Length: 68
Image (cartoon, rainbow, N blue to C red):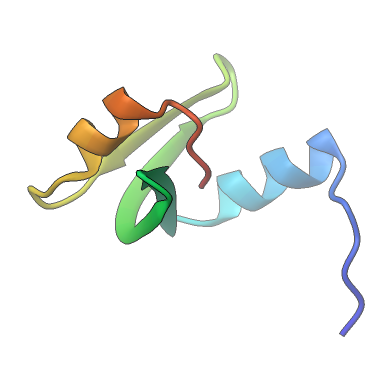
């Protein structure tokens, strides 16, 4: 497997093609990764996500460094 940095165009294309992903965040040096359904609006560069109730909102407020 070859791993490389994705360009912005490659990232946008991947987001346009997918509708399921994972959101990752951390608090108190502990990771938290959960599945989400999402839609990407390429015109406005927005990601809209749907997920179940859980602790991710509290964790993202405590540490806004989040990845998809």
